Image: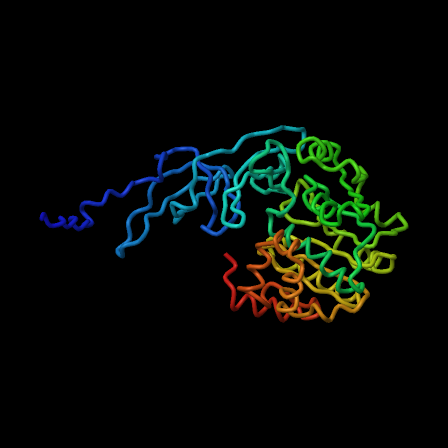
Length: 373
């Protein structure tokens, strides 16, 4: 009987390590995840393999992004072959199809960004993996949109489990959040949207498949709210200025504007704030205004954005991160749609969720304990 031959041991010298990710080489067009942690892959050019370190580790690479920024230290798993496709070019907006990591899988995402702010995506909508040009509204791809989608959860807990009957979303973009809410409430909530740009509205209708039942007002959102008798149950503000990297415009952060919303018949106000270079000024202004104008207010911190919630109803039940996490787990449909928020609540807790009345204290602690990079 012939004995079974033992296989030779694989030594390091016999293992072939590819110098570059499969199918790629220097100056290849790629998509890469910034910091190895971002869900969205950004377009760029693979420059080179990084110099080896003294300790054995996974090889890393440098990428030149389309916005001119160079990043080193990117892992193989964070770089994929370029699959980006330009869908449309309007006077003000560009529409691309790109790649995003959702629930551990690479998915196609439709992206909208302004010509004046390349590399900053205003809106993203997940596309069906097995049907062409069919949106998938089961998940919101951007974490800041996921944070805004906590609005229905806050509303339910402040209004005895009921859902809003009317909602207005300012800053339409591609309409990802209004479309999600319309699907989430099973068309039982009347949703209006506001945007100042005909180009954006046309893109939302044509390329992001905004439901025709969602009524769109082409108007300046600030004037619309200040001059109108507001009869909405929930108002969500995601207003951007195409000429500025930060949002919303400063008028929306004034006590005059926020107190006007608070005095109206609106039951819940949700606002997305992307602070300026001073990092804290815009966020501090919003926190102060919400704390002064509403009976109850909280914020969610999605680096670098803050999403503020304000209501005159008692929502003390959602004051702590654990309470928000528990409420989400009791709503599987919403929990599946916000995977990034579940991760933030599990990992960062109070760094993610806080009371606006304590914003200054929380912010100071975060500066000390958190890495803002």
